[in-house]
Length: 217
Image 1 (spheres, rainbow, N blue to C red):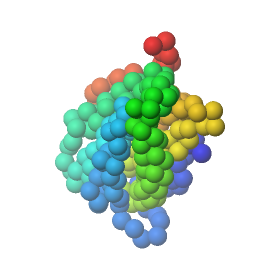
Image 2 (cartoon, rainbow, N blue to C red):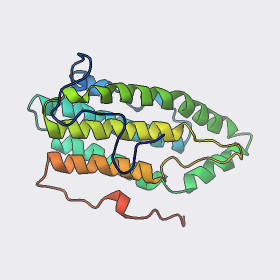
Image 3 (spheres, rainbow, N blue to C red):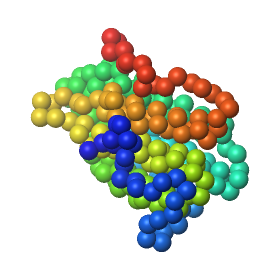
Image 4 (cartoon, rainbow, N blue to C red):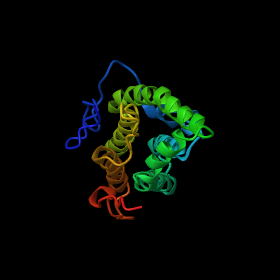
């Protein structure tokens, strides 16, 4: 089940600024919030590269939040990475990339790249979800409420992507577009909202969840 679209509930029960759990410290004490970058995703197809881009950007946001916890302003970097996440959702929601997977899977010369992409996503997605859930469970130990909320939403976006990608194939040989879903758009918009709450004076960009995806290409 992906993150709850209405409440943003990814299994986190602590309120911003509230300490809890079983004695673990803040996840931001670890480099990049304990999350790997996008290096574990294959570059076999553009579709797998989309996951690489998004996960790398989210992990960089968590790394910057570790600086924020130490009083180091890293707004510029956080906003750059947010833009990468938003752009990935907008671009890869296009059904063109799913049609490419189908086309390449039917060509003996390119089928191996599609198979590698699917295998890679099936292997990496559960790992991504597990690590993000572990990080999320420790967010009550983050002292700054606004930093905590951005960490919650960043881990949540990774969880949503990983859970979506676990269902990338179906019995009809179609390829589920993990990007063009309300859950993925809402999860990414939550990250933007939390960034704007952390840095309230700048960059009031339009939420990607407010615009329908153009499927005409």
